Image 1 (cartoon, helix red, strand yellow):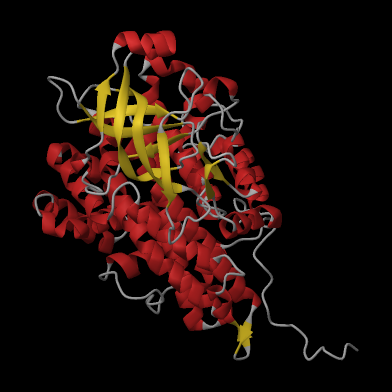
Image 2 (cartoon, rainbow, N blue to C red; image 1 turned 90 degrees about the vertical axis):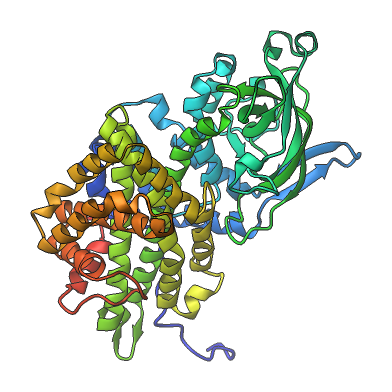
Length: 561
């Protein structure tokens, strides 16, 4: 016997790994089919097996433990503004891009394409979240770029499923990514306060420098306080166009390399030292006579960006739902594999209550997220487009807002094992807040709900009623709650101070309607009893006594048949 061996290691749950993340999630599988993308089941099952492997899950750890590093200059003192990443980052990016997480609905816009991509994105959200940032921005940029003929040559590279991290002009690359840069020091969410300026480059100078590609070139001077993914091949930014007759911000496409092969004058000042999302590079930059090309109409940059914002906000909802699912799986797996006070944690009534409450929150987030994606699939239908316009900011507010509390509770289930960096719970917990902050904080989202309602309240009321009414006949408690919301909608839409209450109630009501219509009765009843029949709030683990916690947990994390 080893003289230094003092004890046997026991009563420790094995890591949650080598699990098919799609096969073990009935709520996701059912929502995929229900919302019109059942044709994607086989590919998602294969992706779920890959993403749930120990090797891929460990890539997330590596990419976050050794985050990006700014290389401002080469060894000879020449400015290069390069970002160096751990190899694990590039492996994760390769997986995302190869799967088409940035491009699939644009490459193959069949019915259900957005729902299939949403399910895919939710699976990736259970693994590593920093690498989702460049993918989201690239995905969101495509509709706007497709309307600009001068940028048509970029689209095949942006839509390519070949990840190419090399710093080269786009003509020499196999694939390209797009980032965004909106906020400045003095404005933050108030982008109208931006001071970055753009002036038209004289046509003769532009043609001499870039040939035909120089048409419409502008010179940009200014800064960005948050410039996401500085290693991207191009960025969309907002700037004031300085010319007679122009007012308001315009949107500009600013490539990293110019048509003549030279580097654009985008100077990375530093990388942000962020609370979470540490695998991903976010930066501060200055534009020192950088060159860009306008996207859209002069002075209409904010509407251009808001269209992109709809897609990025959808991904914030999906990302938060994915992190919730990951935190739940790790916590429930731990509770099933660890005993305390004479029995498994997962068999103890109070722990069952906590875990079942988390499982309800996760399933409702998944159901809502995929229903929201169907609004994007069916955006040619005015009612679906309007429903998406309301529920996107409402969902980004409420589901992202629930994340940090969810993450803290899941961490507490695992105790000290959840609080140390050996496992993923600390990283998942730190990831939650970014989805609330990025692309508009909670207040901005709630005000956006009011704006959407204010523009078309009768139509919005009708679209929401059509979504809720099928469930009103199923449960009297829900019928009363949903009816009260519909009755109060005109008044609530005018109450800026109560906008958070409105956004919360919108999401809870839609979630309850989805579960009542489509989830097992014990799941729907528990959600209604805990979120609709009484005012939600307080800690997780306050489910009423009649709730079948064991049945909810049996559904929450299933072994494949």
